[in-house]
Amino acid sequence: MSTGARTTDDSTSIHPREDTPVTTTEKAPAVQPQAEPERISGLRRVISAIGVQNISLIIAIAIVVAIIGIQNPLFFTVPNLKVIGTAIAIVGLLAVVQTIVIILGALDISVGSVAGLTSVASAMIFTSTSSAALGVLGAVIIGLVCGLINGCIIVFGRVNPVIATLATLAAFKGVAQLISDGRAQGYTGADPFFVFLARGTLLGIPVLIWVLIVVAVLAHVVLRYTSIGRNIYAVGGNNIASRLGGININRYIIGVYMVTGAVAAIAGILITARTGSGQPISGSEGLELQAITAAALGGAALKGGKGAIAGTILAVILLGVLTNGMTLLGVNTFWQNVAQGALLVAAVVIQQLRSGERRIGIPG
Image (cartoon, rainbow, N blue to C red; front, side, top):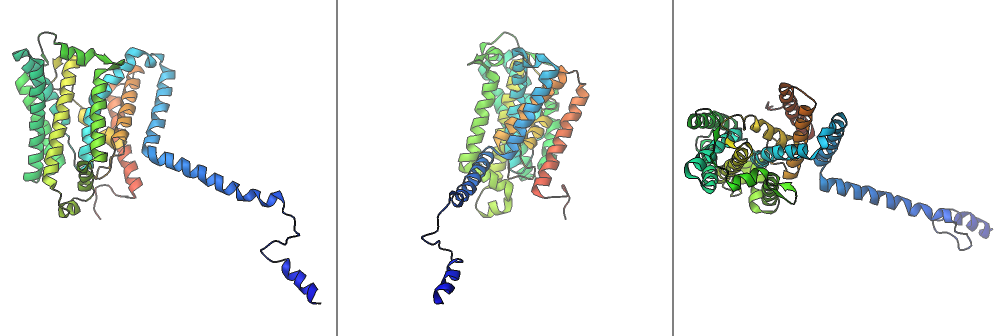
């Protein structure tokens, strides 16, 4: 009697009986559920390392290149690719420093005017001294002074960065027109340095692009691996907490604007080398909008505290390819400006949606 009752209980036990055969179908489920999560986890790590924003930009670049290349085979020719590269170099320099300013929680609308002013200054100094080195040095010093003026207006005048740099945009452009009488300033002679900047190559890559690569790598290293970069992110994320934490916010604001002015001066020198003359307006007009658009498309949050140089460079490439493609396809220049403005609006809207904010710039 007792034996029969025990047999019934054993059939429900979680431990298999010794005389119960173990089939292969009982082992298989233990392997499959572990392999799949590992693959998903690895894919997530790769996406996280590259960044979702950067992946979307790479896909967008591939799509735009494919469409333009199919429509116009001239797009893939070496001369055209060099044209894209040189255009990207100048915009990219301004976009890199604009990204740093935006991470700090500010904005610099005057970078195009600083580039124009320093372009004129470098050509005039070179003409008067016959020294390219003095032309470059003078332009960089003027760029630093322009940045110092911007920073001091914001810090000591307590003026909103947008308003301050909007005012200096007009002022710097006016100074460039005054000293050049509103005309391009051609320099005399063919200095090897300017020729090397304009037409030289290293490893088959134009020197202008190497200048952008060096500046972008330096900016990435400073932002990512130094205490200065971490403090810039901290100030942009929460300036009150940063001040309470002992960070000298005023020093960072003035310093970042001075660096921005110096890099804008380098862009101005490249404009002079590329065009063979100092350009007060035509060579630099609209560069500020392109720089801000590239920074926003690359993931820099306009409210500060977020952004990366890699995303900005990808966005610069996208803008450069798009602009070149529209030119090859015969799209009117006015429509190209409309497209850039639309891209900037789209980038800001996407940022707001990602951050969960429904109202832009409106408190409450």
